[in-house]
Image 1 (cartoon, one colour):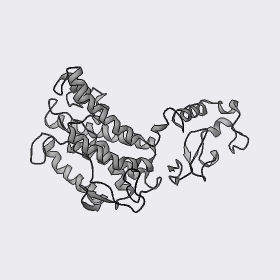
Image 2 (cartoon, rainbow, N blue to C red; image 1 turned 90 degrees about the vertical axis):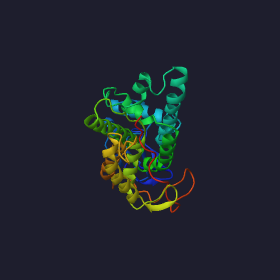
Image 3 (cartoon, one colour; image 1 turned 135 degrees about the vertical axis):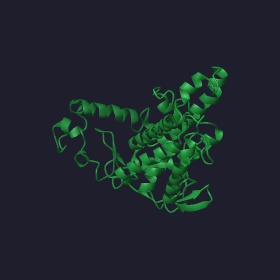
Image 4 (cartoon, rainbow, N blue to C red; image 1 turned 180 degrees about the vertical axis):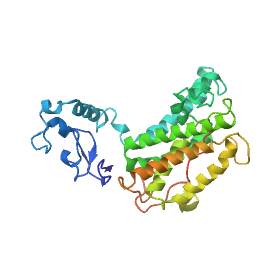
Length: 317
């Protein structure tokens, strides 16, 4: 099943436009019904004269050529076709690859353990080195330990594919990176203001996952989830309860003190959640709304609710 890029409708037998490479339902499959950019290149707004076999028509103009390249790369059977609709699992794999680099490759092959300058400069978004822009991304996939990555993996596995299905892969990818980057920067700038450049850095995908959770909350606030797989509650209660906790706890977390402070990046969680809620409000009404969560490939509409909330805390090494 795929989602129409025009109306968000789920389609068991989707159509892929040969010009723009997007996926559409039967109603929007014709170029004139989804405002295909190729219409401008054809100089034939109704599209009635294009047979689809005229290479001179297909290659007129840069946009249609780019769309054709994208289709060959990311379309069905293309070398990168797996990534379309599966970025949740790609991010999940990237997290574990990064984890292996952090705790096996760097310490044992490169001799650079977690306290080394190389390790920190590669994986940690630090308040003392915000200018290391690559850590804006690597810190999203890096984690502070096995428990940290395990909880985040569970949350991404259950929530990610649902949101990706309703947003589409491009929007989901932008959401994941956008929420993750904003979350990390929110944490390190708060640390700069309260502790200074020598305060703790931040790692973890928790902020990005909170962005995913925020979108899902806006799309269906009454979706039933199970806190710790046991306690049933509507999604909005879980989301805003966690947000309230993060607001209170964030005052202690910024300085690493307090009963609920510790090494948990609460402000990163809150920053990611705000991005998700804002983006959810922006796309609501333009995408489908999930009625239930599915566990992997099993289950169906009306099946059991989702898992126990967001992943583990964003760690501050």
